Length: 345
Figure 1 (cartoon, one colour):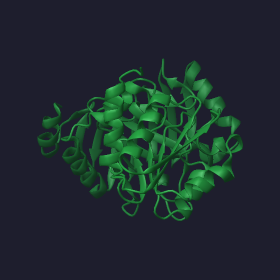
Figure 2 (cartoon, rainbow, N blue to C red):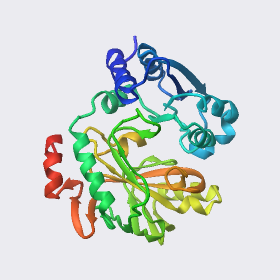
Figure 3 (tube, helix red, strand yellow):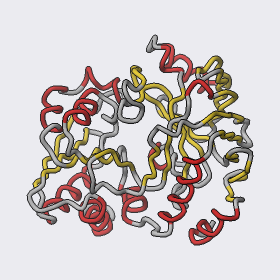
């Protein structure tokens, strides 16, 4: 008997029936690797079948990288062929394919594709993040998304030392991740809001004090990054900062030093675990991604880079056009408070 067997299948039904709203006769490709949780994969395939869909599970050897860095380690052409000919794709890989060449080709060439990124989950996280989504989160997230989209200038600080400012680019997409995968496009796990600023306006200091994936995972000490006009110019800290710096250098790619997106974490149930999908949804955190950026997110060309990384800044304070919205992870904007109270925050 599998761990949390009934709870996992219930969450898988929510994923397929409610989030994907999968229809009779549709095809769904489920990708996983040899480090993925087999229970979740099988339950999701069974749920898709119960909804009348035709599931296909694709198992891969676990690559030692993520994104573009997986290209040399996966069957790119065969995998691309499957993804170009499916209605839906849910990714459970540990070595995630998001931003890889098969991902790029599928997103560009399959106009009907509905994709959800659910990488590196275990049973507890799958049940918590998919099966137990607080319905009050939607109103709070939509309001915060609207406020962010309308803001021109932003500043973020943290007790660990982050102090970063930038301007928003209103023409770019902003993701309000509610788990809605019923229409073509990219969907991510509920509980995060992600957007793409004017890169050259990003200036200041980012201090990661939660996790940094890849290459570090959970952080034992802060990693301090100085950003000048949208480029990391200095990395400071202890052993993990050195590990991170050497990992970046190994790609010999200047675009790996570019911050390309920022996100809010807004899920009250998320906790710091070392799993980036959970960590970047921690209530009151901000998250920065560096490196590769898809043309879908930043037309027409995106940012070509050899891979992508994400780091977590805990207990963030946020200002929009000079008005403080969060204070060390707590909501201080009166309008937002009306929504956050229903989430117990």
